[in-house]
Image 1 (cartoon, helix red, strand yellow):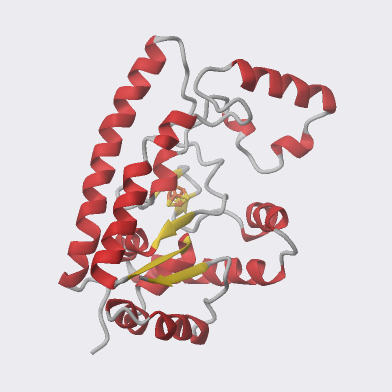
Image 2 (tube, protein in one colour):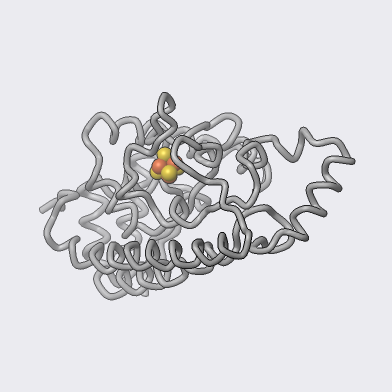
Length: 248
Ligand code: SF4
């Protein structure tokens, strides 16, 4: 029997992750409070969406949480986006071009409301959307920001990043807020191993589309990695860059 996205058996996979999301939110808020008390500044806020055109990697367990939250219209938009991601994966000559083309051509996440700049699935959004914070103004997060800088501006940027607490010294994102999400990744890995005897990782929109496919999920629930890959291939959603299946 094919497995619907809302099947009760999936709750045991997703619940531990949702608990980690809540713990992350508390720890991140605590860390940010201390950071700001020391004079640090986090520039991210409501209405800012400059990073929502970046490729996003996640686990199938997290994709399931998003798939369960989508209405049919949103699911259709995500599936269309997944096929654009696939086309990019097939034609990009290397990782750098893949990321650049994703931002320039595949474009913004279909779950973004461009009019308000808000995420329409804020409660279900994956880890990467939760743990990415900028220590610099939004213009530095926009696609092409580095490419458009003059050599002088690049030197200034590098100097500023190096002297800004909270960055890793190379880019303007806040490293400790990213590190704090480590338990979510570990929990996703453990949860998939325990319930599916496999780990499935990949592109956000690709996996969200696959998570809503009963035949794909049936193969996953049975721990049948090859059958899952074949189903993804039938749907034109299998590529090593966007889908990794490892039986354990
Ligand atoms: S899920 Fe939300 S926060 Fe994440 S990329 Fe899409 S619109 Fe942005």
